[in-house]
Length: 397
Ligand code: NIG
Ligand code: FE
Image 1: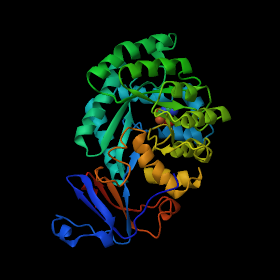
Image 2: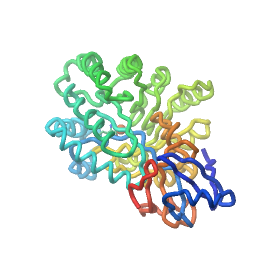
Image 3: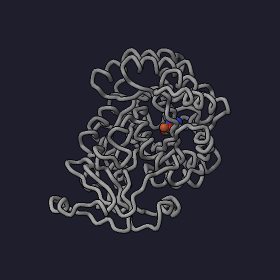
Image 4: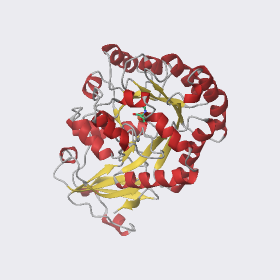
């Protein structure tokens, strides 16, 4: 992961939205330039693959800054949830909001993320928690796919919190998800992946297994929330069920890391990609995922924002880059690989995004003049981006 191939003084040609050729200036054919419709002079700047953000809850009704103040006053995430805040608070607001209004709010957020360099994003449901409202969220995501140029992958996260209506009968909620919601999601082609918040006071490992099995039967790989607050065996179960990614990983035992190391050492092609969410750790003051320990054991790492109103009110991958380096001690090259090629893989997009490769999408970031790659995470909180192209077309210039 520390290897980030770089060409100093290079050129790149995009044609029909794809990278058609690139190389060092010594190999550039001026005749080719004659046939190029538009030239962007990137002297002194970096051209990078655009950021891929494989874990977000970008569709939500409203921010929850009142809980932010509760947290400053000393309440924990779990205490706030126990008082009716948290995910259930967001669900109540989302259920009351029209599909059109939800669409407009998410569209605004995504436009701002594109300007910050994000060219692909995964979006989860999980604030509906009824058949109707979960479908509403996923239909909004489907509309966003055709309205915006960035690539969007969608995930069914109906098992995000147990709705109050099911407090006395949790298995009835699982039945509702699997027997009523999932078939409709499949029929309308609304979700690529399936997720579950496997956590003390949320969903158990046995429930995670049931959900991943049902998803697999519909061709939907798992991308699961595990080990955010407690280690209860979600990683081992996700490995067993060939999940695509295991996300969060703030609280990891030696056995959890060992399980991932063994899966990678076996060399199966289906081992889950650990996806760390440093801006969530930052915002709710929990440990950072053990990036260094994972990489030392030859386990790859991906990075994502986790954009959501409760634990990460930010969809800015540039801030994730700084936190990954500053707090999780990833090298700049490792972190950039984690938020391009590895994060593309964490949403099955590595064949079209995540690196500068002939045939991949010309979805690129051109930085301002910066002295080095390390300067990007180093000078945190500053905007280092000059131009963002998606499929060769500027979304910011
Ligand atoms: O990834 N932990 C579960 N889900 C979100 C938080 C959801 C919320 O608080 O609204 C997360 O951190
Ligand atoms: Fe999340």
